[in-house]
Length: 251
Image (cartoon, rainbow, N blue to C red; front, side, top):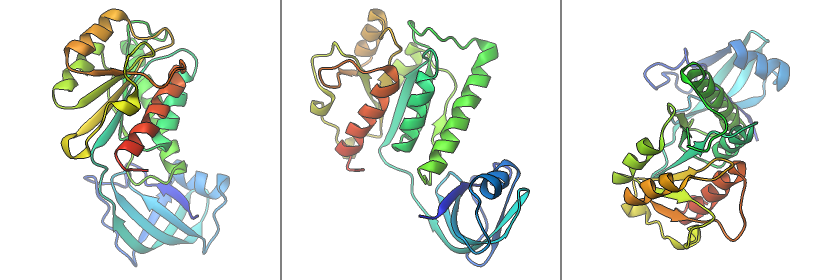
Protein backbone atom coordinates (compact mmCIF):
# COMPACT_ATOMS: atom_id res chain seq x y z
CA UNK A 1 0.00 0.00 0.00
CA UNK A 2 1.28 3.46 -0.92
CA UNK A 3 2.41 5.80 1.84
CA UNK A 4 -0.16 8.43 2.81
CA UNK A 5 0.52 12.06 3.70
CA UNK A 6 -1.61 14.97 4.88
CA UNK A 7 -1.26 18.39 3.36
CA UNK A 8 -0.03 21.14 5.68
CA UNK A 9 -2.84 23.39 6.86
CA UNK A 10 -1.42 26.38 4.98
CA UNK A 11 -1.75 24.44 1.71
CA UNK A 12 -5.45 23.83 2.21
CA UNK A 13 -7.65 26.84 1.45
CA UNK A 14 -11.34 26.95 2.34
CA UNK A 15 -11.34 23.21 2.98
CA UNK A 16 -10.44 22.33 -0.60
CA UNK A 17 -7.38 21.69 -2.77
CA UNK A 18 -7.39 23.05 -6.32
CA UNK A 19 -4.92 20.63 -7.92
CA UNK A 20 -6.25 18.16 -10.49
CA UNK A 21 -4.72 15.14 -12.24
CA UNK A 22 -1.59 16.28 -14.07
CA UNK A 23 -0.77 19.00 -11.54
CA UNK A 24 1.64 18.85 -8.64
CA UNK A 25 1.46 19.08 -4.87
CA UNK A 26 4.47 20.20 -2.84
CA UNK A 27 4.94 18.89 0.68
CA UNK A 28 7.06 21.15 2.87
CA UNK A 29 8.05 21.56 6.52
CA UNK A 30 7.51 18.68 8.91
CA UNK A 31 5.55 16.64 6.36
CA UNK A 32 8.40 16.79 3.82
CA UNK A 33 10.95 15.90 6.48
CA UNK A 34 8.81 12.96 7.61
CA UNK A 35 8.37 11.75 4.03
CA UNK A 36 12.04 12.03 3.04
CA UNK A 37 13.92 11.29 6.25
CA UNK A 38 11.58 9.04 8.23
CA UNK A 39 9.53 7.18 5.61
CA UNK A 40 12.36 7.43 3.04
CA UNK A 41 10.18 7.85 -0.02
CA UNK A 42 12.02 7.77 -3.35
CA UNK A 43 11.61 9.45 -6.71
CA UNK A 44 9.10 7.46 -8.75
CA UNK A 45 7.36 6.01 -5.68
CA UNK A 46 3.56 6.07 -5.60
CA UNK A 47 1.99 7.92 -2.67
CA UNK A 48 -1.40 9.25 -1.64
CA UNK A 49 -2.02 12.74 -0.28
CA UNK A 50 -5.11 14.07 1.49
CA UNK A 51 -6.41 17.33 2.86
CA UNK A 52 -8.25 15.73 5.77
CA UNK A 53 -11.59 16.86 4.34
CA UNK A 54 -12.33 14.19 1.76
CA UNK A 55 -9.96 15.09 -1.08
CA UNK A 56 -7.87 12.03 -1.96
CA UNK A 57 -4.96 12.46 -4.37
CA UNK A 58 -2.90 9.66 -5.90
CA UNK A 59 0.46 10.53 -7.38
CA UNK A 60 4.12 9.82 -7.98
CA UNK A 61 7.09 11.52 -6.31
CA UNK A 62 9.04 13.69 -8.78
CA UNK A 63 11.51 15.24 -6.35
CA UNK A 64 12.40 14.31 -2.77
CA UNK A 65 14.37 16.22 -0.16
CA UNK A 66 13.95 16.82 3.60
CA UNK A 67 12.70 20.33 2.79
CA UNK A 68 10.44 19.65 -0.18
CA UNK A 69 8.69 16.68 -1.75
CA UNK A 70 7.03 17.20 -5.14
CA UNK A 71 4.20 14.82 -6.07
CA UNK A 72 2.78 14.65 -9.61
CA UNK A 73 -0.95 13.91 -9.24
CA UNK A 74 -2.34 11.09 -11.39
CA UNK A 75 -5.86 10.84 -9.94
CA UNK A 76 -8.21 12.79 -7.70
CA UNK A 77 -11.18 11.43 -5.75
CA UNK A 78 -13.66 13.15 -3.44
CA UNK A 79 -14.68 10.85 -0.60
CA UNK A 80 -17.89 11.79 1.24
CA UNK A 81 -17.95 12.12 5.00
CA UNK A 82 -19.35 9.19 6.98
CA UNK A 83 -23.01 9.29 7.94
CA UNK A 84 -24.12 8.82 10.64
CA UNK A 85 -21.14 10.36 12.41
CA UNK A 86 -19.53 8.69 15.42
CA UNK A 87 -18.29 10.92 18.23
CA UNK A 88 -16.09 9.92 21.16
CA UNK A 89 -16.45 12.01 24.32
CA UNK A 90 -13.33 10.89 26.17
CA UNK A 91 -12.84 11.83 29.81
CA UNK A 92 -9.44 13.21 30.72
CA UNK A 93 -7.34 10.51 32.36
CA UNK A 94 -4.01 10.29 34.14
CA UNK A 95 -0.85 9.26 32.33
CA UNK A 96 -1.38 8.71 28.65
CA UNK A 97 -4.56 6.61 28.86
CA UNK A 98 -6.76 9.27 27.29
CA UNK A 99 -4.21 9.77 24.51
CA UNK A 100 -4.16 6.02 23.82
CA UNK A 101 -7.94 6.12 23.43
CA UNK A 102 -7.71 9.08 21.04
CA UNK A 103 -5.11 7.33 18.89
CA UNK A 104 -7.00 4.04 18.65
CA UNK A 105 -10.36 5.73 18.04
CA UNK A 106 -8.88 7.70 15.15
CA UNK A 107 -7.52 4.54 13.56
CA UNK A 108 -10.95 2.92 13.99
CA UNK A 109 -12.79 5.69 12.18
CA UNK A 110 -14.17 8.13 14.78
CA UNK A 111 -15.42 11.39 13.24
CA UNK A 112 -15.09 13.74 16.22
CA UNK A 113 -13.32 13.65 19.57
CA UNK A 114 -14.55 15.66 22.56
CA UNK A 115 -12.20 16.06 25.55
CA UNK A 116 -14.41 15.75 28.65
CA UNK A 117 -13.57 17.19 32.08
CA UNK A 118 -15.43 14.60 34.16
CA UNK A 119 -16.00 15.05 37.88
CA UNK A 120 -13.67 12.16 38.69
CA UNK A 121 -10.96 13.01 36.16
CA UNK A 122 -7.61 13.01 37.93
CA UNK A 123 -6.10 14.99 35.08
CA UNK A 124 -7.38 18.57 34.96
CA UNK A 125 -7.15 21.06 32.10
CA UNK A 126 -7.33 24.55 33.53
CA UNK A 127 -7.53 27.53 31.19
CA UNK A 128 -3.79 27.48 30.60
CA UNK A 129 -3.73 23.75 29.82
CA UNK A 130 -6.89 23.53 27.72
CA UNK A 131 -5.40 24.83 24.46
CA UNK A 132 -2.18 22.89 24.94
CA UNK A 133 -4.07 19.68 25.68
CA UNK A 134 -6.40 20.09 22.72
CA UNK A 135 -3.45 20.75 20.40
CA UNK A 136 -1.71 17.66 21.75
CA UNK A 137 -4.78 15.53 21.01
CA UNK A 138 -5.10 17.08 17.55
CA UNK A 139 -1.47 16.15 16.79
CA UNK A 140 -2.15 12.56 17.89
CA UNK A 141 -5.24 12.49 15.67
CA UNK A 142 -3.28 13.76 12.67
CA UNK A 143 -0.57 11.12 12.95
CA UNK A 144 -3.07 8.31 13.58
CA UNK A 145 -5.16 9.43 10.59
CA UNK A 146 -2.09 9.23 8.34
CA UNK A 147 -1.27 5.77 9.67
CA UNK A 148 -4.83 4.63 8.98
CA UNK A 149 -4.98 6.26 5.51
CA UNK A 150 -8.05 8.28 6.42
CA UNK A 151 -9.59 10.73 3.97
CA UNK A 152 -11.31 12.66 6.75
CA UNK A 153 -9.45 14.02 9.77
CA UNK A 154 -11.52 13.83 12.98
CA UNK A 155 -12.23 17.15 14.66
CA UNK A 156 -11.01 17.71 18.22
CA UNK A 157 -13.43 20.08 19.94
CA UNK A 158 -12.84 22.38 22.90
CA UNK A 159 -13.03 20.91 26.41
CA UNK A 160 -16.59 19.91 27.37
CA UNK A 161 -18.49 19.45 30.62
CA UNK A 162 -21.10 16.81 31.45
CA UNK A 163 -23.79 19.47 31.09
CA UNK A 164 -22.54 20.37 27.63
CA UNK A 165 -22.54 16.73 26.54
CA UNK A 166 -26.04 16.20 27.93
CA UNK A 167 -27.36 19.04 25.78
CA UNK A 168 -26.32 17.14 22.66
CA UNK A 169 -28.77 14.35 23.49
CA UNK A 170 -31.58 16.52 22.08
CA UNK A 171 -30.26 16.06 18.53
CA UNK A 172 -27.96 13.03 18.77
CA UNK A 173 -27.94 9.46 20.06
CA UNK A 174 -25.85 9.72 23.22
CA UNK A 175 -24.64 6.42 24.69
CA UNK A 176 -22.93 6.53 28.08
CA UNK A 177 -20.69 3.55 28.78
CA UNK A 178 -20.96 2.26 32.35
CA UNK A 179 -20.19 -1.24 33.72
CA UNK A 180 -23.22 -0.98 36.03
CA UNK A 181 -25.72 -0.59 33.17
CA UNK A 182 -28.43 -3.21 32.74
CA UNK A 183 -28.37 -3.20 28.94
CA UNK A 184 -25.50 -4.23 26.69
CA UNK A 185 -24.26 -1.95 23.93
CA UNK A 186 -24.92 -4.70 21.38
CA UNK A 187 -28.61 -4.77 22.39
CA UNK A 188 -29.57 -1.08 22.20
CA UNK A 189 -30.20 -0.97 18.45
CA UNK A 190 -28.93 1.87 16.25
CA UNK A 191 -30.85 2.67 13.07
CA UNK A 192 -28.59 4.50 10.57
CA UNK A 193 -31.65 5.95 8.83
CA UNK A 194 -32.86 7.63 12.01
CA UNK A 195 -29.55 8.69 13.56
CA UNK A 196 -27.56 11.80 12.65
CA UNK A 197 -24.68 10.97 14.97
CA UNK A 198 -23.82 8.58 17.79
CA UNK A 199 -21.94 10.04 20.76
CA UNK A 200 -20.07 7.53 22.92
CA UNK A 201 -19.32 8.90 26.39
CA UNK A 202 -16.40 7.31 28.27
CA UNK A 203 -15.62 8.12 31.89
CA UNK A 204 -12.25 8.43 33.68
CA UNK A 205 -10.42 5.85 35.79
CA UNK A 206 -12.79 6.20 38.73
CA UNK A 207 -15.89 5.90 36.58
CA UNK A 208 -18.68 8.37 35.92
CA UNK A 209 -20.04 10.07 39.04
CA UNK A 210 -23.65 9.20 40.04
CA UNK A 211 -24.87 12.77 39.54
CA UNK A 212 -23.34 12.82 36.05
CA UNK A 213 -25.04 9.53 35.16
CA UNK A 214 -28.35 10.93 36.40
CA UNK A 215 -27.84 14.07 34.32
CA UNK A 216 -27.18 12.01 31.19
CA UNK A 217 -30.20 9.77 31.80
CA UNK A 218 -32.52 12.74 32.36
CA UNK A 219 -31.30 14.26 29.10
CA UNK A 220 -32.40 11.16 27.19
CA UNK A 221 -29.04 9.41 26.88
CA UNK A 222 -28.78 5.61 26.91
CA UNK A 223 -26.54 4.00 29.53
CA UNK A 224 -25.01 0.74 28.30
CA UNK A 225 -22.21 -1.65 29.23
CA UNK A 226 -19.59 -3.50 27.24
CA UNK A 227 -19.95 -7.13 28.26
CA UNK A 228 -19.29 -8.37 31.78
CA UNK A 229 -15.77 -7.03 32.29
CA UNK A 230 -14.63 -3.56 33.35
CA UNK A 231 -12.48 -1.98 30.66
CA UNK A 232 -9.89 0.75 31.17
CA UNK A 233 -10.75 4.24 30.01
CA UNK A 234 -8.17 3.77 27.24
CA UNK A 235 -9.94 0.64 25.99
CA UNK A 236 -13.66 1.30 26.41
CA UNK A 237 -14.04 3.92 23.69
CA UNK A 238 -12.25 2.00 20.93
CA UNK A 239 -14.10 -1.21 21.89
CA UNK A 240 -17.47 0.58 21.73
CA UNK A 241 -16.49 2.20 18.45
CA UNK A 242 -15.87 -1.22 16.93
CA UNK A 243 -19.34 -2.36 18.02
CA UNK A 244 -20.99 0.76 16.56
CA UNK A 245 -18.99 0.46 13.32
CA UNK A 246 -20.47 -3.00 12.85
CA UNK A 247 -23.99 -1.86 13.79
CA UNK A 248 -23.87 0.99 11.27
CA UNK A 249 -22.53 -1.24 8.51
CA UNK A 250 -19.15 0.47 8.31
CA UNK A 251 -17.44 -2.86 8.91
